[in-house]
Length: 309
Image 1 (cartoon, rainbow, N blue to C red):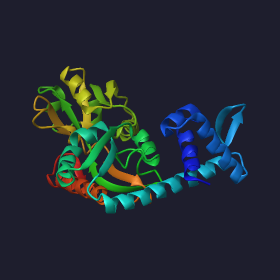
Image 2: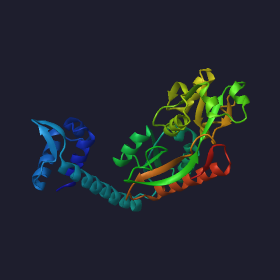
Image 3: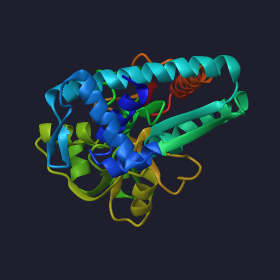
Image 4: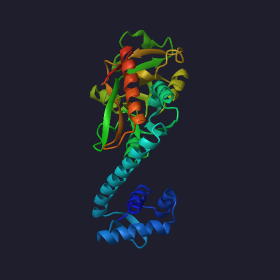
């Protein structure tokens, strides 16, 4: 059994059982991928894939089990390589962060700046995607860390570090009648057109369930994954915005008024996560420390809708 056989197995599965696509990702010819799989099956004495002629349909039950072990073996191989790099090139490397727009735009900039000052020779990559896709990228070792609110805490094969808790705020153009209410209610919110996040992003699930529990039907006119898009259409007076509180910038958003809604909705927890048993290089450990320091500072500022995790 060879590492290249296990790598072909994992890559083939991640490529949707498409041999051509797997070969492209591995920078080898298609026949080499097929040969690696056949030799691995011969050595194990079982079929790893279900086939219809030359077409691969998916993994067999044995294939599913072997895949899990193959991923762990490759992950540990990666850990061994990282140990070597730590001692040979202790101040260089690449740190891949998977996160959402809200985290990348409103939370991470001070962390990234401090990290760059401490580790100027480490390239930092930010990959933005949905929380669900971020978990997949993490498990497939396409990113080193994932930072988001949804999906991470429920995943059993990752190590999660609580970051901070946040809640929501209402934003609207000055003079909007809802701003005259000292403490807006859920009923008052639902009496106006709403603009908020799409499903799967930034606490949308708890938002919906809170309204359902109250027996209310919101009039949602627009949803977006990007907070800046929400603000744009609030400025166009399409409706009032419901956003994560930390996504309000007092300077850049001075033309919008804000009201804290923390008493109306459950608190959300943003985590930073990495694959279980992953070897963390010193600069990766330092990034987590900087992230934790920053979110502690955010919380100590007593910003509306924010508190320590």
